[in-house]
Image: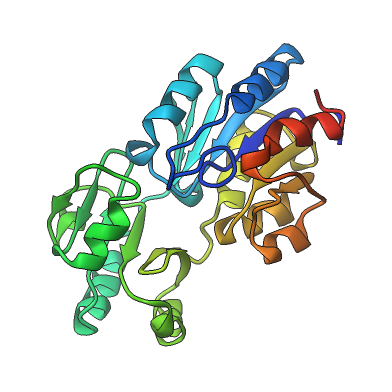
Amino acid sequence: MQNPKIVFFDIDDTIYRKYTDTLRPSVGEALAALKQRGILTAIATGRPPVAIPAKVKTLIQEAGIDMLVTINGQYIEFQGKTLQHYPIAAAEAAAVCDFLAQQNIAYAFVNNAEISVSEETGWAREALSRIVSSYQVDAHYYRRQPVYQLLAFYTQEHDSPIDAAVAQMGFKTVRWHENAVDILRQEGSKARGIGHAIGKLGIDMKDVMAFGDSFNDVEMMQAVGFGVAMGNGEESVKALADYVCPSVDEDGVLRGLQDLGVI
């Protein structure tokens, strides 16, 4: 695909290395080149706006990124204004929280402006330290604020039983840390968020390109017109992609766009 109308970029391990707080200058070069060609630029991330790293926030402003698809597609902004959002019903959030509490599993609530945990635990503290500098503690946060996604803090060995239980409640999990998962409605994904957002802009999915690397990018890779996986990405994501570019540490976004003839 040489002429996409909009290109979406995941954040972590696609344009930014969270464990080293590294954002390579080549990303800005790539975004500027897209702008010069009149191609819209967008972020598609599992992070909420409040947890977007400072370096990426600066990039968004300086590069004039047009759209933010955040919280795995549950909260979307276009040119600084809310375009679409999908809050979880309070009764549904309560059911998931009751189940997790019965399993002695700490959980958290995510909306666009803040994160609130049910209790302070070592796993919660360590996982959240990777994405936010502060958070609230309120096990009933959902009663007073909109919630777009839940987090739960447990190890991989518990995935199968918890996946099955939350599936019966209409939810799914996506692991993003050795001790943490996202919990969102089964129909929720970056792909759904992108689809609704571009529809409002009059853009067809066949004219969309997306870069990603991890499990929450699977639906996006399957849905867009052209999916690009990072060289450092999960093998399952690479298998679905139309093209695999170099790794994030090797200026993958810039080189991928150049190799594909987009810029």
